[in-house]
Structures are given as C-alpha cells and as structure tokens.
Image (cartoon, rainbow, N blue to C red; front, side, top):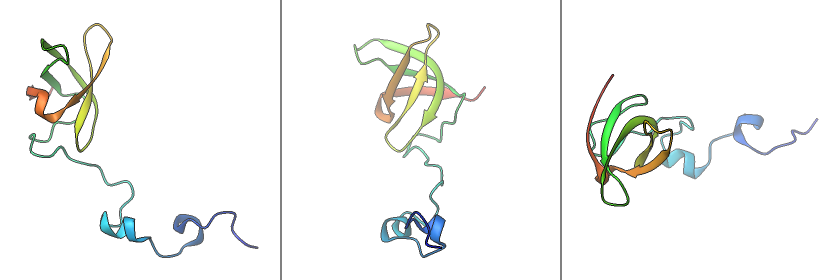
Length: 89
C-alpha cells in the first residue's frame, strides 16, 4: 500500500535540503540571538511599540523576538532589540 503522504516522517525517507541546513531536527528549539537566552515564564521589561515601558511574562520565543503577556492580559510581540532586561522566576 502506498503512503498517503510523501513526507519523510511518513515514508521513512531522507530529510530534505532545508531540514539538512537546519540540522536535521524539525523540533529543535530556537534560542534568542544575542539576548541571553530568555525562556518561557521569564519576566522581562521592554520598550512598548508606542514608546513607553512595558513588562510581562514570556509566553514563547524565537529567533527574532518573543511574545509577552502583560499584567492586564494583553499580548505583545516584542523584538529582541526592544527587550531591556529580564530575569528567571
């Protein structure tokens, strides 16, 4: 019986060129570039898009920034250059 998908995870085949460039690990977590490695649930201060200060808890992070939940329940997408300081809780 032929598999329904041509995806390597389904067929057991070789990984593609993109996955080879990424290290061959599809679920490898990204670390923030040059920002000290903030992790989920760390508290951070950041410069809000409107120019004022903001703070909150990191919900997720990636190569270019993180998503922060503030005390009011709002979510903010913050690039790493706008993160001022953070600490682990």
